Image 1 (cartoon, rainbow, N blue to C red):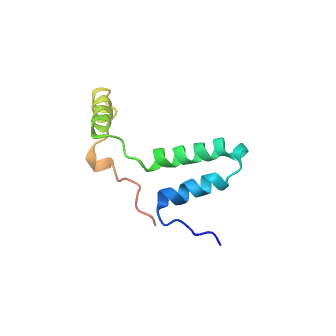
Image 2: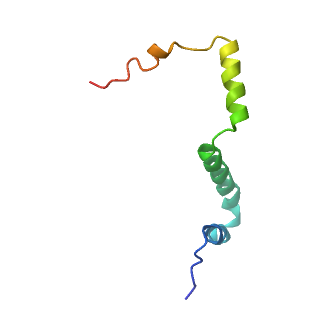
Image 3: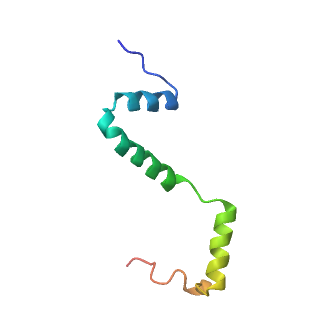
Length: 72
């Protein structure tokens, strides 16, 4: 009987090793997409994007941000 590793990294490696070679490129894409989806951008990146929006006048007045959000 195979002992299951307790460390998530070991479990991930174990699952990768059980995945057929031909599916590993797709698995890699899934993992990268997941990481990109859960990672927050750096403060520097966020500030630059906000500054660019402000300079391009791509803003909304605060009092209009929640218009239409109420479900009826």
